Length: 160
Image 1 (tube, rainbow, N blue to C red):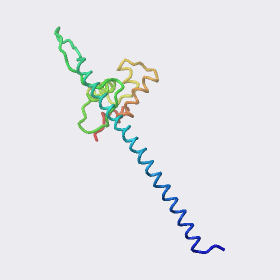
Image 2: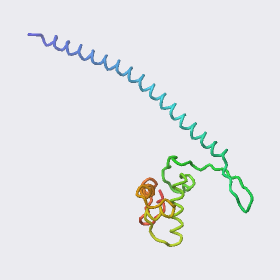
Image 3: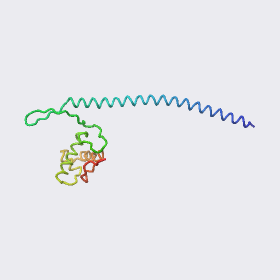
Image 4: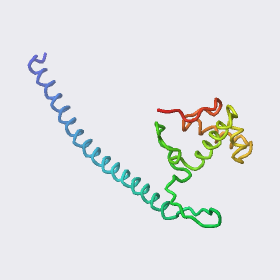
């Protein structure tokens, strides 16, 4: 029969081996974490550079409008189709939204100002010239989900 002291020494040795293994694993994980943080930083910088380049590109390709026969150049810093929808917050101008979102909101505001009452996504799609195909109506209805306003009840984007 093994002595109690011998059993305790074996357990202590097993615990030391486990601790050493965990220390080695910790060193490895720290290295993996550092590499992941470097990759994250590179991706954040790449995204920021792209956003800046798109803004410069949009500013350079100024929108030209004709007003009473004269051409007026207006810088367009508006988002491009497919751009990310910013989180809704109080005082956020409609101009930060992609052009399609702005068009939907324009129809909602126009109909609301004429006391038209609640609008359905199908009505907005028709007003925008998209027709009544389910895919087009669904796309208009998705604006409600993404930007958080109620097309059915006719409310503009909620604040906060």
